[in-house]
Amino acid sequence: MKKIDIIFLVISFVIGAISFAASNNVFFPIGTILVFELYYFVIARKIIKKYLSKVNTIHCCYHFINSFIITLSVKESLDDAYESGIRLENKEFNEETSNLESMPIYDRVVYLRKYFNLAVYKMFVNVLDLYQDQGGNILNISDALMRETTRTEKALADSVSTGEKHLFEFIILWSLTFLILIFLRFGISEFYMTMLTSPLFMALLIFFFVLILASIHIFLIRFSNITIKEDSGV
Image 1 (cartoon, rainbow, N blue to C red):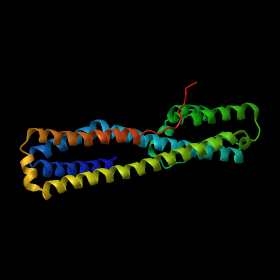
Image 2: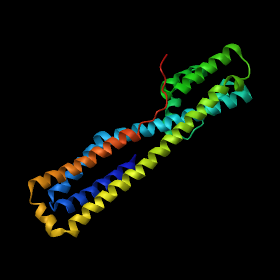
Image 3: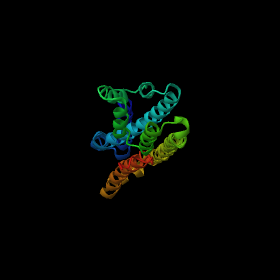
Image 4: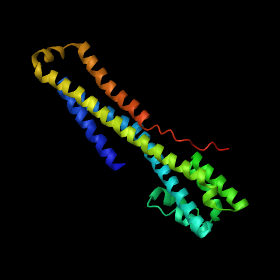
């Protein structure tokens, strides 16, 4: 998150600089930067953190299920399968699994259902129950599960890709808008400076930067919306 914090800090100062050029008022950019930074640390940062955590959790779930099933099919050992599944370079996931070391393997697998909170993991636990009760070839039993995990991972990849595309379009759109504003400020400077004396124009300028903040918030909400089915809890 530190990298994202720095990026948003830079964005805030860039928007602040643009607001200074647009308003020709030293207090305007100070207020703009403070409002944007307050929004980021109070609201936006939580949205981004939750989004990144969910993406990370889905990736971990995909790896865990696939590694577990493949290892179980070869070694027929829950212990080996579990160890293979948790072999991930992921700090959050490793911390979660390290707290489960005193539990039996099967109980750890069931407990992780709360951590992943995904419908596909619930399906995995049901398949594992069926395997333990009836035996058989785990690859055959989990065929539908493996297809579902692949579909889930692909859906996540598509969602992230689409989000990045929309982010690029969002940046381009507002960059062009800022360029137009800067052009008006310096291209017709005398007329623009006259407009700055109007309270109505200043009010519209404030509304413009509020609109930027609102559009960022709406974009973040849509960008962070991952439509991957969660665990129903039943």
